[in-house]
Length: 374
View (cartoon, rainbow, N blue to C red):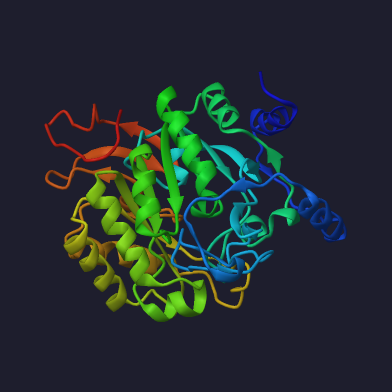
């Protein structure tokens, strides 16, 4: 039976809305005081104890060294008495039932629903963050509902979703919660998909992957300056993550948001596509998305549609077999084709499947398209 908090969460989903509520400025001071007075802390994984009560978080490449009472760059992992704790275990700040294509996953259970959740926090500081209200917030700045892993899985099943997606903010920072949900979901036959910036260290990633069916990584650029100036992360760590996921056999898709003048040159797109083909293989889907002014990067114009279309053309020229145009209307970039015959495997309009000619990933002609189909 769902508890009161879960009833509130599920009500938001049933009526077709999303739970994405942010405190007004006047309530933030009171919220912080109330939150920090709470003893509802969850032991964190992946940290090292150092002299003087310092802990070093080793979950992600930030490697935050924290004195007692300090909180990491992610804003949700805190040193309390010489041990590291998560401030957001079970603290759901956003929830919605989305089409799986919205993540985007184009080779995972097409046309299915995905029960999508997030807590506050992120281990990057992207100036163009789309969900900055929760991703760039401390947990006491965002209204959350207390939801157990069991309740998440039950709600996913009740909504008719075939998967649970960790998305909206950065799932790495609520690692313990994600891992517990993923383990339980596997027992209940619900698939797990992760929508991430890829900024995670190898050991925790490898512990998580056996419980994950598909991983979507934002490869934000193929130049180090972009990562340094606009995200606070580093490219090499993300490239390492991509290789580990691919080698594990977990289904992988990649998204690159094209930001005008920052990562959208034809030369950079070509280098990115070549790296994907050489290191991950030609069958990994690559999605190019159009930038819109967001958060702290409002001075740039939206990406020209033709830039997104041209990026797809370049990636195809470089030998990638499944390249998509994300949030622009472009029929060729929205649908999946057999690379050998050109026949339509999955026809889409935006995030919606119009026609699916695949059966267990195979077309009537015998052409096989890789992905997670059943």
